[in-house]
Amino acid sequence: MNILRAAARRVLGLFVGDWLQSVIVLAIIAAGYFAVSRYGMPALVLMVLLLAGQLVWFAQAEGRKRPRT
Image (tube, rainbow, N blue to C red):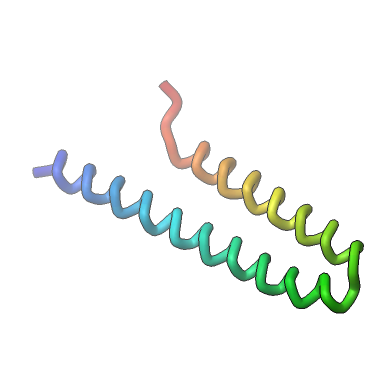
């Protein structure tokens, strides 16, 4: 029974993590769309940096969750 619980927790964690990351990416893109139309190239650079930063953040968080083998 513990194996089934652990497997379910892991599968659920994958979906929740992916949904959270997707929502954050969409929020950055939506805010960037309005910012680029108003502020131009500096806002585009900021949007790219934010997207890269969130990618690194989620990759590090995923790396901390998984045990090293």
